[in-house]
Image 1 (tube, helix red, strand yellow):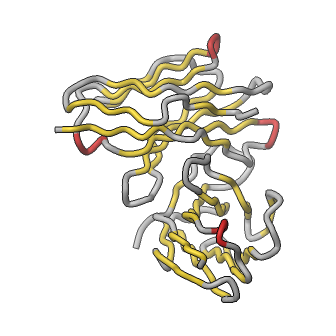
Image 2 (cartoon, rainbow over the protein chains, first blue to last red):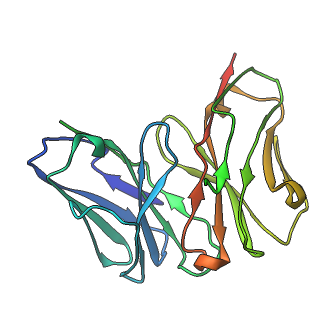
Length: 114
Length: 116
């Protein structure tokens, strides 16, 4: 596979469930990002990892827990979510932080919290 | 205040028409980068172009062209002879040296509908 992949593509979960989103990049990049895209709002940066280290947490509630075991994989663990957390969650990667590289995005996971 | 403003929420054109998508940005930094991305219905944002703050030359790539004007803090995107496949949401984004280019600030997007 090439580019940035995300699984699952669609997820429906109840407020008491625990689930995880997975992102994998095949571009040899060292930086990875999670974004939240809600209807009629700009993309919101959630977390940034550079060489597996978290460099940015954009005041995200603790019910979202990221994990980056290596530069190719990024997870977003979800627990006790709220209906307002329903959104498209996008993963992206870039060559590394601190340089002006464009980000490459995956297709996203459409999350619905019931 | 929003750093990137895309005032056009939605635009509809008929195929073969030219269309310009507006982007206005705000920054105090002298070194910054601007980007355009396309998001088709499949959801994946596709990178289109990157432009740095020191290069105000306009750029043309096929039917796409970009007009960067620092004097008006604008980075507009024109599609010439639009096609149905151009239908998508287009996002403008900014990254700044101040934040070590760590953050991308995205506009709210402009939805382009190209009708046959």
